Each structure stands twice: as structure tokens, then as C-alpha cells.
Length: 273
Image (cartoon, rainbow, N blue to C red; front, side, top):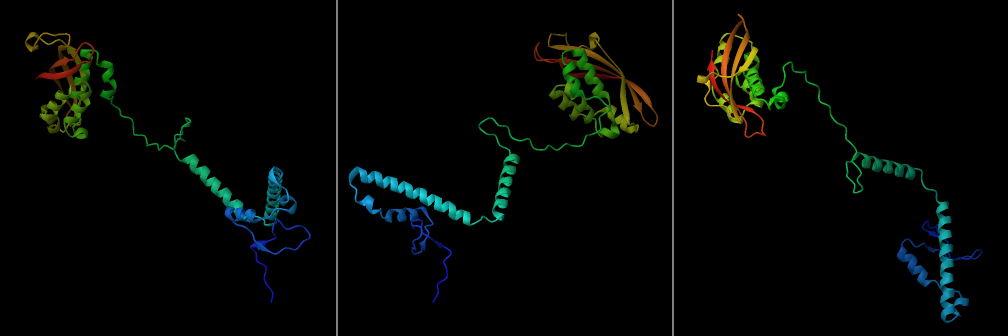
């Protein structure tokens, strides 16, 4: 009866060249290796020694045996070539890890900045042909006359078809007005806007805005360092089936909280044709 060669067995590293030895399983774990070393018998010449000499000789012998086993394991590994697929898989895994580390945002303790992610650029909107009141508000906020003119120009400009309500004009004038005034103007109906709708007008454009001092009978109180009254005379041109023009005279109150604050329109006191 013949026995097939066990692929998991090999020559023991302690077998001497030229001498036949029995086959034993090769240790597979560190614990098995330690057990094998513990059971390995010392050569007779070392067992005959005593004391310090025996301990030194034993250490040198174990060191030599470790070197011998290391060399034997190295030679055994050379006999079993690594499959080609293993390096390929290792390279793929390394590439995946490197790619994830590059893409994933992080903020390391060494001050490294995260990689910038691609930004989505929104399509550009067509530029508006009319100035934005909010953009010019800071430039005029230090002069009551400039604030009053900017407010009146924005408030009296009407586009019924485009706006749908007089509230759109109030919004355009809001950067120059106080919040209570904006709410009050939105809450009340607007006669000029209704007349433009009735005339099927598409636009009422202020063509001339003059800012001056109100008359004595139109001035509610004397001016102070934080409150002034101004008269706004506005000429408007209407684009409609039958174009026409009209004039409005507004008494404007412009105020500020203190000398360091910006001016804003706080009241529209009079509306005269």
C-alpha cells in the first residue's frame, strides 16, 4: 500500500543533510512554533555543561537555530512562486485607497487643507437694464436729499403689466425707507397704479425729480439734526395706448437714529397733483 505525499508536510528544519528523517507537520501558528522549540532537545555537548557556561552555550545554540530556521523558511518561500493575480489585486487595492484619500474631504491635524470639490456653475441670468436700489443705497444714505430722491424715483416708477401690483414699486424703494413705512405703503391701495391699469399703461417713468424745501404750511415741524422734511416734485411719462404725463408733489420725512446713523425715509406726508 502506497501513501500519497502530504502537500502540507516538509522536511523538518532540524534534519541534518544526508540523513533521512520522518516527516512531521510544519507548524502553522506562532504557538505551534514555540511548542516545537520548547520540545527541541539540546545537543549532548551543551547538556553536559553546568552553570553559566551552559546558559551561554544554550543561548548561542538557540540563536543559531533561529538563523537556520529563518534561512530555511526563506528558501521554502522561494520555491512557491506568488500567483500573478496577487500583485495585481494589491495594486488595485492600493489605487482605490489612494483615490479615496484624495477625493474624501478631510482636515488633518497638521493643517492640511481638504481637496477642493468641483463647483457647479449656475447659468448666468440676463443682466437687468434698471439699476438695483439696494446696490446704491449705501452711497446715498449719508445725505437726506439723496435718500429722498432715490426713494421717490424708485417708488413712482410703475410697470403694471410686469409688476402686477404697486407692492413691487414699494419693494424697489424699500432700501431707502424704514420698515414701518414699507409695511404701511404695502397695506394701502395706490391710486396712481390703479389709474395706470385703467389706462392699459405698460410703464410710468419719472423723467424729472426735484428735491427742495417744503413751504411753511406743508412743513409739519422744524428740521433737526436727526429729522428733516423735503419736497419732491416728480414729472412722469406714461407709456400706454394713448401716452400722457402727470406730476406728483410729495412731502417726505427723512430721519435717522443719531448723528452716526444713515438717513432713511420714514413718512410720506402729502400727495398732491
